[in-house]
Every structure is written in structure tokens, then in C-alpha cells.
Amino acid sequence: MQKFARKMMAVICMLSLSMGLFGMTVCAAEEDQQRAVYYEEYKKIVEKISSDTGVELTLLPAEEFAEEDWRTPEEFERVIREFATAEIVIEDSDDDIMDLLSGARSAVLASKNVSFVWGSSVNTTIKIKASFSTQYSSGRQYISGVSSISSSKASGNGTWKQFGSDYVILDAGRTAQVSASGTITYAGASTNKLLTVEFYCSATGGIS
Image 1 (cartoon, one colour):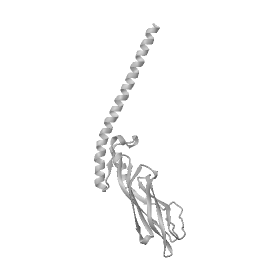
Image 2: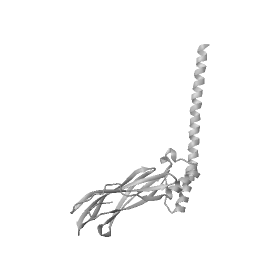
Image 3: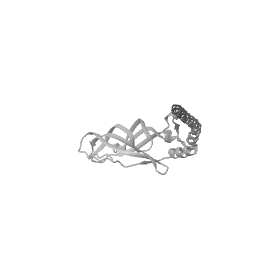
Image 4: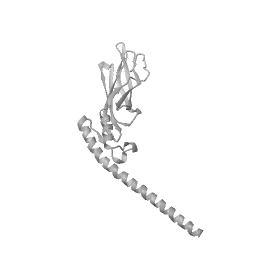
């Protein structure tokens, strides 16, 4: 009798385990179906916001969505609209200004931060770095060239990937306009941005 009872208990345990796995499979299938429906709505939302704002947005492939990126279509539209209309804030250099002696100098490093701010507390800060060459002429230092332009996410939300850079020397060498182009991604959508900052050369060669 005890042997029979043990066999029945084993059968019950196996059935319970099977039903649990079946339930998990059903739940996973329902979640995948719900996400597929949401994703189709996301496509329409991204297209609409791009048209409304003039900001060209790209929806990430569904398999690249992080778990927290799956939202109701209403919440997704709110978040992405805020992202598309983010305010851009350029911050002062956080480097020590370097004063130079007369003559040619190279590899004078400086950086500035550019922040995207949207919503009540969401932001991404991008640090743009460059190396400056300066040349002494007519009693002061001037910028003669810019190299090693790079940018990376310093803090905040989302991701940043640079794909280009450029510079222009202005004001007879007193100013360098440095640009970094890249893709910023947040909440399942991305957009390309051209970030431009200006660096100034003091009479003694300080870059700020």
C-alpha cells in the first residue's frame, strides 16, 4: 500500500511540473503576441512623431529592445516625443586651461560636454574631446590645427555612437568650431545628431 501511494505521489508531482511548464509556455507565447501588437503600433508612432517634429527617428528592431523599452503604445508615444524634442545644452569645458610659451605647440587637449535633456529627469551627456595645435604669431597664440576629435557618452540614459567628425578654424585662428556626428538611442528609437561646440584660444594658448 505504501509503495502504491509513493507511485501515485510521483505521478501527481510529474503532472504538476508538466502543468507548470505548460503554463509558463502559454504565458511566454501570450507576451510575445502582445509585444508583436505593440511593435506594430510603435512603427506608426515613430512615423507620426518624425512627421510632427521634423526629427528623423528610427525604430530599433524588436530583438534589440531592452526589457524596459516595452511600454504601452500611449507611454511609448509620450517618451519618444520627449526624446525627439530634447533640449540641447552646451556646458563649459571641465579641463584645466593650459597656458603656453611662445612657439608651436601640439596635443593641447580640451573637451566640452553637450547634454540632451528631455522629460522631467532624463538626460544624456556627450563629451567631445579634441587635440589642438597652436602657433605663436604677432604677439599671441593662435589655433593652427585640430586632430583626434572624439565623442562618447559621459553620463545619463541611452547610448551614443559617433560616426563622423570635422572642424573649422574661425576668427583668424582664435576659435575652432568642432563637430561630432553620431547616433543617440533611447527607449527603442534612435536619431542622428550633429553636435557642434566652439573652443577659444587665449593670447597665451589656453584652450577653453
